[in-house]
Amino acid sequence: MTGTSLSSKPDRGGQAAPIVVLKFGGTSVADPKAMRRVAEIVRAAAVGGNRPVVVTSAMSKVTDGLLDVVRRAVAGHVNGAQDVMDGLIERHRAAAAELLAEPARREFDAVLGEASGNVTDLLRVVSRHPGTRLSLQDEIVAQGEHLASNLLALSLRAEGLPAFWVDARKVIITDEQHTRAIPLPDEIAAAFAQHVAPEVAQGQIAVLGGFIGSTLHGATTTLGRGGSDYSGALVGAALGAAEIQIWTDVSGFLTADPRVVSEARTIARLSYDEAAELAYFGAKVLHPRTILPAVAMGIPVRICNSREPDAAGTTIDDRREVSAQGIKAIAHKRGVTIVQVKAARMLGAYGFLHALFEVFDRHRTSVDIVATSEVSVSLTVDDPTALPAITSDLGALGEVQVEAGYAIVCAVGEGLRNTAGIAGRIFGALSGTNIALISQGASSTNLTFVVSEKDVEDVVKRLHERFFESPAPTTAPLAEAGARSKA
Ligand code: ADP
Ligand code: ASP
Ligand code: MG
Image (cartoon, rainbow, N blue to C red; front, top):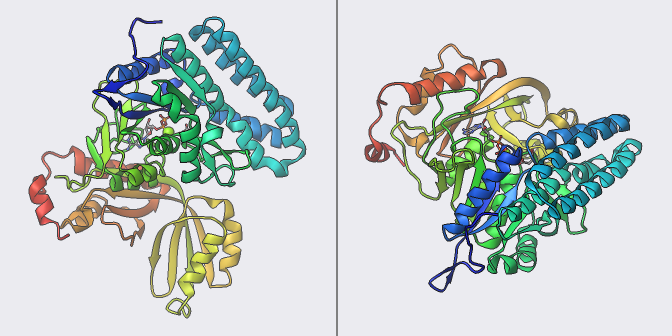
């Protein structure tokens, strides 16, 4: 326990202190050292006059491990599944041994025992009834955030912070689409008002797992991989937070994926639209839906580095600024499939495109890019699960061709579409590369195109070099660049 005193009712001259949501990703809670850093970040927020609310991911790699557990059970290897699960439980137990003293350690041991027992029971059911897979998969995979949030709440208390654990499944209410559930904002707001807001008003620090929720009937759901960011934003919207902070392992939103471009650098500010486009087109640092609740409530989102808490990071809000380079960042997404429907006589016919999109709708598959020519329509999808059924249904509309192995590249910047010469500079940097499709999207903030997956790293590197690493950009400085845009 450290000596910092936190008043039980943070107050600013009679006004309640602002609520700030701090969401920590897997690497930020990967081990005891990381969890102690989290405690210091939370303490700094509280001492700085805010009321922190904490949302945490599972410890890093735990969700992958739990999915492995499910896969083994579905394949009938219950013992193997149990071994992997035991390893995950042990990892949490070892972390708790470093972070907690009695009686907190015993309290967490009880949580571990219950989780382990539940999963053991579920594994048997999964192996016998693979048809129940998705609902039980959510039940099992949710244990990652369940355990991390319990452990984090107890370790914050051990560090002298007035933390209390909230079962995310009581407050993040969703529809019934297991593994990719859609949150129900009104129900979430009501649940937070009942179960979280009163304690937060008293100066308590709520800690809950991201990514997980439950249906109105109490079945556990998850929000899709990387969904803890989304939870953070949902919590922020439900509590009327002043800011949503996403704490991760990089210093903010970078000009490109740092795993591909080592020269990528932090972008100080992005608009909601820019961040949403980048997240949607593959910038993993933010789950694609995170921005929605923030925009709805006008809450700024900040991306921060938990290993470098003092680094500036990136602020995302409703301000729109045109950058001197013309683009602010490049995102890319692998694993894209092009579906082409050739229907020479039908294409111009009334209702054709409606019938085409209805097929994708029916199979709950979203389409990213659409390009039409006189005789064909090409579309891209990144979730191939329903493609066999989609292809068969599309057969009624024309000749269908499906080709996997593509990647989407997306250059993003406010005013980009209206800034003279940008497309020329982008495609000029890529001479010699085959561009399969170019987006006809309506957004003025992005230019999106499709290349072969094998070319994508090279394309992203070349674009980054052209726009961010060359000496002084040839476009006008900020004010002038804005004035030059035709918007
Ligand atoms: P967390 O576990 O904290 O949610 P993620 O792994 O989901 O973290 O997201 C952070 C990672 O996103 C970074 O380590 C980086 O590799 C990747 N990333 C991809 N594109 C970008 C980008 N444009 N800016 C920052 N990070 C990016
Ligand atoms: N733990 C979940 C995942 O790995 C959610 C998240 O980390 O955001 O996908
Ligand atoms: Mg993430």
